[in-house]
Length: 223
Image (cartoon, rainbow, N blue to C red):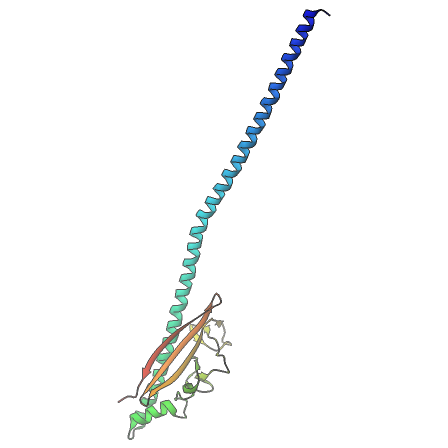
């Protein structure tokens, strides 16, 4: 083979190797660029997901707290009405004793009626609720004692209230009755010989947190 042909062959070989080498470098650069772009896209996606999550979580948390606050407000309002009902019931019992005494007539009617209301032995007396808390069931006959609306709590616990036909009662056997979270107690506390303080308390639990509403009022003898 001549020297000229060898140089040409060698030159051709060198040029071909250079082209192949450039192709390999170009392919490697493209692969690195693609890898860089893919990694950048993944980071963008993660950031976008984080932003969307934060944007959605805030309103959802606010809505959840608003629902809880509305439920809490409704329960407090119901408890306030139930506690006030206890005060009005004790007042009605006192008034009944006075009306009965005036109808019977006699002397010292006001003193006799007040004594019967506080310490009497009849069902119209609140005496059983002076030493211990009583529960109130307006679905029963007015009065205190067994079978009447006011009954001393059994042991250390008081019976819960059930909602039946629009009335809060302690009777679970009424058709359609549904147990509520509320428990109501009423107690008469002596302030003086002519003044008794009625304490009506409604307690309940919401999300395992205990709550209570207490209403106080003073009852005195008619003149």
